[in-house]
Length: 262
Length: 249
Ligand SMILES: Nc1ncnc2c1ncn2[C@@H]1O[C@H](COP(=O)(O)OP(=O)(O)OP(=O)(O)O)[C@@H](O)[C@H]1O
Ligand SMILES: [Mg+2]
Image (cartoon, rainbow over the protein chains, first blue to last red):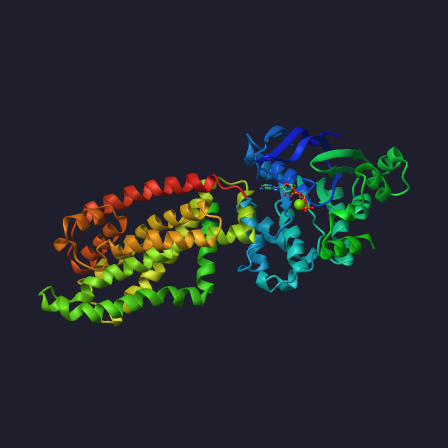
């Protein structure tokens, strides 16, 4: 299948610091691709460059045949994005946040209505559609953002640590739905995570990124074979020379890691 | 383009209508000025043979509420940055200029509503416009003045990363713009320096035009007022759009 994302020698420098170092990879259309790496690896920076929010220092990107630097409009149309940090308007209702997005992305009204209902139904927020977002829990906000990212039928959905703060049940539910969308709409899923289990279970291909470099890429089986490790976790340890959780020195991050493993 | 402007405008409006504290809060200052100055200086003003100070002051106080509300609207850009919503608008496949225009018009509309509320309040305090027929034109002027200062607010909001910076601008830009504009005192007897300062202050022209329509007296004349407002608004819309388009998150 054709590659819908092509990245070549992508580099981002903040002042003196190289956050992303000459990375290259490709994602085939209709597949799920995971960026697995510890805190500060450069995952979010990469996503921001792919989605037109940051200018690369050098290298080339192609999203659905378009260059985010030269044709940001076209790229923005193709992408749905769930950011790592919240990006909802707390003073609007769930429905209004969706409506705002739909209008901004030019989704025609009847389609918009139906799609918003369907998506809110799916993330189980339909009966809370007229509540203000500020009254939502963290997990509810997350679900709303995921629904919003899918609203305009993007070709690619970028999910930056999408399941952070979701309980296991909701997490499974979300992945089930994403896989279903992938089958029915042929959507490509690009997500970042520090949960190895999540990458292994949901992604066809995984790129392990650390200190701004892709140190290995392939299916989880390939990664294990290459390193001769029994689990992806051991493979990661071999590749980076350390355990992923060591990067998460703070207790709350560690908790998340532990919860993510279950 | 239009749908973007519309939805950004609608958002500003919804936020305004829902925030009762903001509506009341931004009424406090103009009313305080109206009472303190209007009644405080009223007798001095009348004794100098100039007629009713409240009548003179009312357009100035309306101008005040408009400049404060519309420039403060720029703070919304900083809020959006801090709460992450700015990203949502910046990754949308729409021209940045449409986002900026929508925000600006939203801010201007909100400011014009404030202007209307203040106008009603000044009438309660004893202000009599010479003609009711002028009110629609006065409203248009409020919108225009609001658009001008909204554009400045959005521009400043795009350049600032935190509220302290914005506070500084409020104090060092908005206060002088207001006090030196002729909103509070007639410009026909002030020292030349002050007159020249007022001539470079766009608020002077907004207030002057409203005064022309509301009490039939003007310093610069309606045509000059409107000409200057249109020109300066165009300049700041362009500048604001430019700086807004340069935002990175
Ligand atoms: N705007 C910026 N200016 C300077 N440095 C930055 C900026 N954004 C990111 N960085 C740095 O780039 C590195 C990569 O950050 P990035 O957010 O991409 O990591 P990440 O892989 O998403 O991590 P996490 O798992 O914590 O989200 C970090 O060291 C970070 O401090
Ligand atoms: Mg990140």
